[in-house]
Image 1 (tube, one colour):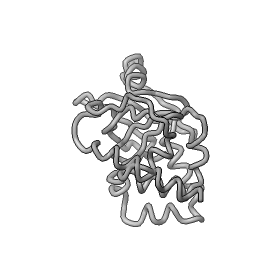
Image 2: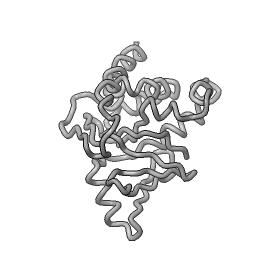
Image 3: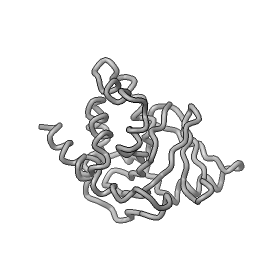
Image 4: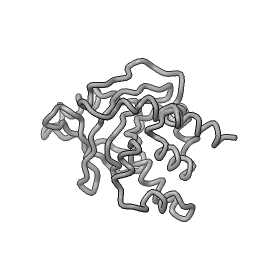
Length: 183
């Protein structure tokens, strides 16, 4: 029953984020607060179906449905599609739950950080690169791209662009990203 409700929620989130293809990182904001939590929004949006399947496989739906607040840098389906063939299918297997959980929680920050908050951290950083601690225990580096977009750099040097910012939910905020970041 719990997985069925979560799946309906994931489908809605993906639909609302389908607008994220194109434009600058801050061209599309969803400033209004939703009564849905992060998981419900993701489950109700078509563009997040892979993320929802991964969250379900890692048993993180309960955590991300709790009060939080959380900031989630949520990879779109197209971000997961950039991974080597078979990666997602391998990660969602029960024997890889620990690795999957580590990757997913690397995309989550404790607290509600809107785009303006992250940009403020970047501006305050002496080198223009803000360090953002994740729930996984690692750090994401945030900087501004040449086009004014928010760029996240992971521990392995990979970069991801925020393509939709400030999808405000009852327990936090979602920023859709175009590449999966890795711890």
